[in-house]
Length: 171
Image (tube, rainbow, N blue to C red):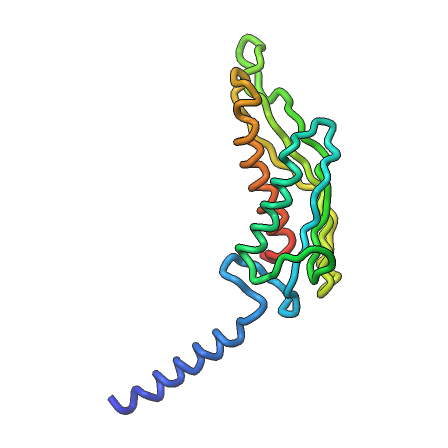
């Protein structure tokens, strides 16, 4: 019984060292954020698409801010920050996605494309500019206005995940 305390002490010591060494750069979401990064800003994404959904710009911006706020320890601020995200909505379009056997439109597709600029003031090598695009298909028999908000919400969620992953998840 007395000889086992050495092993227990060693295991406890190693566990404490591992846990204490992980502060600052890792979260359980998989985010890998520089230890000296404390703030992030997400500028409003203006909508330059030829078709404009009046809710899209605010939804995309708010959802991005909320994602970084809830999934990281970063403080979301306005203006200059350690990490900065800006961008624009470049496309919001519906197109035919599938035809039926008798050449009638059976599915349509809503596609949203955004251009993102990420500036990492702690590690400039991590900076990027990239376009992200996501889509959702829907039954062509449905009135687009009846499904538009649901489709937009799903697409925006995926776009936010893409931006988050590219910005702070280094798998």
